[in-house]
Length: 139
Ligand code: UDP
Ligand code: MG
Image 1: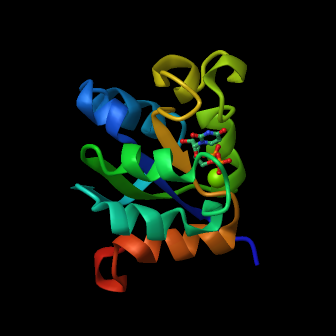
Image 2 (image 1 turned 135 degrees about the horizontal axis):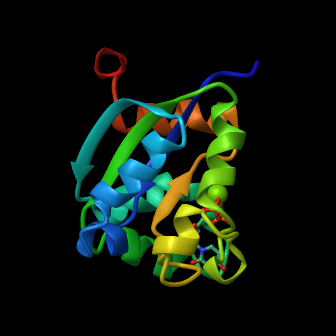
């Protein structure tokens, strides 16, 4: 079932460099409504849980360290075709391959420190949103 919501995080490199406002502006200008929003510091354990799906990948250990190295901003976003449209707005995982006008093209520093997360399916958008926000925090 297609839904109109996706989940994002502004990652530690971008919060550290004061790009929260710039990235939220690009998100709103891209036609997304911010449904829920919070800034939190993940423990390594919790970052590891979030990225559990990648635990066999060679980059997992470094990714967990990076994602717990500073605060992230978690948000649930709403728009028609939210998951696919948000993946388009953020651009490729590797900023060297990200299209002009995308968030990662503008803000990402490397394939790891790539400024933002975006859910890859409706199912994961719901799981990831629930990881940070209870039903009463989602408007
Ligand atoms: N990542 C990394 N090295 C890689 C691939 C991914 O450090 O070779 C990190 C990067 O921060 C990426 C995250 O792991 O955003 C999750 O990887 P995924 O393949 O799901 O990319 P995404 O869906 O974020 O574009
Ligand atoms: Mg992914």
